[in-house]
Image (cartoon, rainbow, N blue to C red):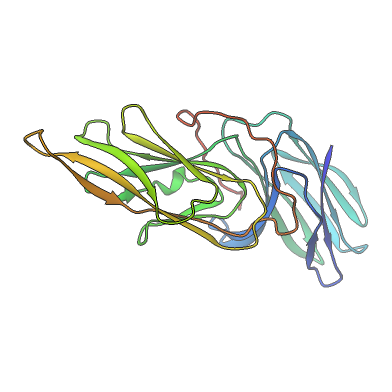
Length: 265
């Protein structure tokens, strides 16, 4: 059983021990509840113990939502358990909570599938559209600059898809600089580009990665195709500066993976 330990000092500040491989800790704004939260993401198979320690009397009123369960309550510590012996087909979202010196404190817990799908539509005009409700927790989208912010560790598949009934096709993906952990594959029918973000290493920095999707457009005469450029950016934000990163990741094609979830308020 792998241990994730969080210790609070006398002032209520958290200190995170080095985490097991494939697990990461982030801190970001969660729209549901309108708050910044610490979030643990689990990306490797295993059974995890999450131990919360604090000075005696500081912790009270523990709670948990699946896939997290409370297993032990003591004056100076709380022990939770997450069974990720099998990675799910869709992102699981839970919480562990307690009061710390009388104030409520919630930590989010994600158990990610091997491939966390981020569905993206390319319109006939070459714009990017994203359904906010279809975004996994830990990813947000800024439509103004076509930027996807990734806040948690995981293996993400951004599926950039054209409408099925169209005279458009994806020709190529061209990176504007170092591509970091990103790779890509274009579907056989050239209607989808899977851009995979294998974000499974600890990172203390903001890592923006820009690329162009070159989309061919067949004109009315069906003779000479033109090209439009779609210009997204994926920004990998700092994760797990004290953790080990890495971890085993299964190979799984993304077409049928659905990753939708929200934290309980």
